[in-house]
Amino acid sequence: MFTKILVANRGEIALRVIRACHDLGIEAVAVYSTADRGAPWLDVADQAICIGPAASSESYLKVARIIAAAEVSGAQAIHPGYGFLSENSKFAEQCRASGIEFIGPPVAAMDALGNKDKSKTVARAAKVPTVPGSDGLITSLDQAKAFAARVEYPVLVKASAGGGGKGMRVVHSPDKLEEAIDAAKREAAVSFKDDSVFLEKYLDRPRHVEVQLIGDQHGNVLHLFERDCSLQRRHQKLVEESPSPNLPDKVRQEMCTAAVRLAKEAKYYNAGTCEFLVDQKNNFYFIEVNARVQVEHPVTELVTGVDIIREQIRVAAGEKLRHQQKDIKQTGCAIEVRINAEDTAHDFRPSAGVVKTWRPPGGPGVRLDSHVCAGYRVPSNYDSMVAKLLVHQPTRAEAFAVMRRCLREFKVEGIHTTIPILQTIFNNEAFIEGKVDTTFIERELMKKA
Ligand code: ADP
Image 1 (cartoon, rainbow, N blue to C red):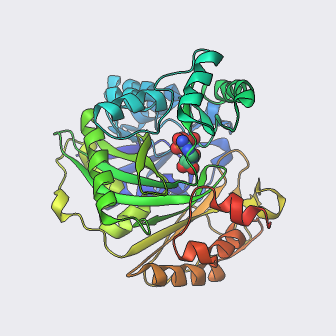
Image 2 (spheres, rainbow, N blue to C red):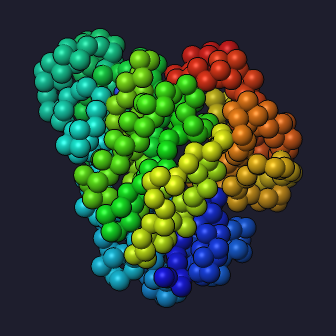
């Protein structure tokens, strides 16, 4: 087992990983940019190394500096968290070439699944249903028009390298296709330095359901059941829960086994998520794999009792998974909300600044993953998430009641947060009944806002 791990991230996930290291008796080395100097999670780490200025391109994305920090500190492994370098296979390769273990999947699996278009080929090989579409990249307008006509409008133009809802355009008619392809390509070129795009049928009000996977280096892969992440704004998740409400058990089982099949096809290990869309008839379609730990992983930790970060570290060290599929149970209902420093009254614009009051809720079955405390300055350089608030209760109704109480209790002053809109969401009848889909927020809530 490792004795020292470097955490190549910031904020709540850096703190989460540092804690997991300490729980395993491992020392944790933090890295930080000058914008994060003095940040609370650095205090919790055993060592903290400055790796550059505020711009992430000059710090959290600087491969050479992060590897140098690991070498200088004597860390044997690097945990990338999510975002930043977590899905960069070249980074994983360089870590391993330097004799430092990258806590994540093998490079070949990252390459095969890291790109949405390529990952659909793997899914088809594993007999996992995919959204009908172009079955390959778009190379000409005529070809795109032919694909779109075959699957019927509306269609979605998607960047193969896409993420975070970027590089996607919905198209309702043939005359708008060229414009959408150009716009998606431009956005993808800027965001991902890769302008390849493909086409998918745009499903009508689907639900987003994803399966958590964990595999070891000995060929064992387990699923840890599913999470429902249908509540999204602009294709970005706001609320996640497990189990997925109103999902027939047979479909749940089929999705979970399909996800394991896909992981085995790709010879995957470590943590990963297989994302699906579920249509109104409960047909499910693979959309992508996130080859890393996700923001919403604690939802699954609460219902299964498996500490995913600890498991990631153990399997990276070569240990075998300590569970068998039959031992993994989904107990009760867990819900997570993402609390962002954003001003909901002004189109969710980021709200950086000093947190004056921070009084989080608590009580039985409440978990808060956050790096924030009173006096903390939320920098404007990074993602705006300031906390993940979770509840775990025997039933969904109880989870909702506790979440409502927690959101009422949570007092934050000095910055704007998304707490008010979350309160509205948790009082919405359709959501309470579990009747939501990925367009719900825009359809039901934003038009009134
Ligand atoms: P990203 O990697 O940018 O997050 P995804 O492929 O995971 O992109 O899709 C994000 C969200 O976009 C999905 O959860 C869903 O809401 C929507 N979406 C993606 N593909 C489709 C589709 N074919 N039809 C309808 N909605 C889709």
